[in-house]
Amino acid sequence: MSASSGSEAAAIAVEGVSKRFRLELDRPGSLKEAILRFGRRDVRDFWVLQDVSLRVRSGSFFGLIGHNGSGKSTLLRLIAGIHRATRGEIRTAGRLSALLELGSGFHPDLTGRENVFLNGAMLGLGRRQMAAAMDEIIEFSGIGEQIDAPVKIYSSGMYVRLGFAVAVNVDPQILLVDEVIAVGDEEFQQKCLRHMDQIRAAGKTVLVVSHDSALIRSLCDEAAWLDHGRLRCVGDPDTVVDRYLDHVASGASDPTLTARD
Image (tube, rainbow, N blue to C red; front, side):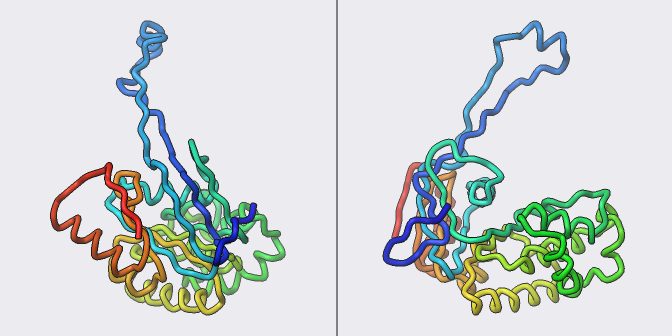
């Protein structure tokens, strides 16, 4: 579905989104215990996101920052369609590619090459399209002959290099990236950043989650700060990062506060 347009076209529109997970506390340890406690489950609602609204302009780089557990990765998974929002609506415009965690979408018993085709199929791309991109994916990842080895023997660095190479070489209009740039070595990080410059020049839209405040400042056109599932600040990256770092330095925590630039 297409994102609604305003004064500037939105590649991603998040409107009043909340996400609830149901947590079962004191889970029974045996079938007998489950039978004896039937109907007396201790289930609690945990709201990971609460009433989040933001728009990512088409062709822009947008950064998400916040502490671990603030809801950043959950929001990316909602946008990617991995989870469904409990409330609210998310709309995107254009082919979406996502690299959300180390080796996401990889089957450990398949080779790297087979996983490239599998990832392409998950994105709606045919085998011929992925075969045409295979040489670029192998070259970018630096996997070499290991492309035909099962990915279960890959190092963490090989996992992320191949995953990133697939994500950026399937011609996405929207790219979601969750922390993976920080996982590779320095050479690979610089390679990723150079490719990000190419993506920007091509007018693609990127939504990136990172704890690297310098990266958010230098790479992004706009940023947002999530805290305990609530949107605290949206706007210029320098302003958003400064507020977030001031908050961290103060040790303050007020999950009920919502501010927006």
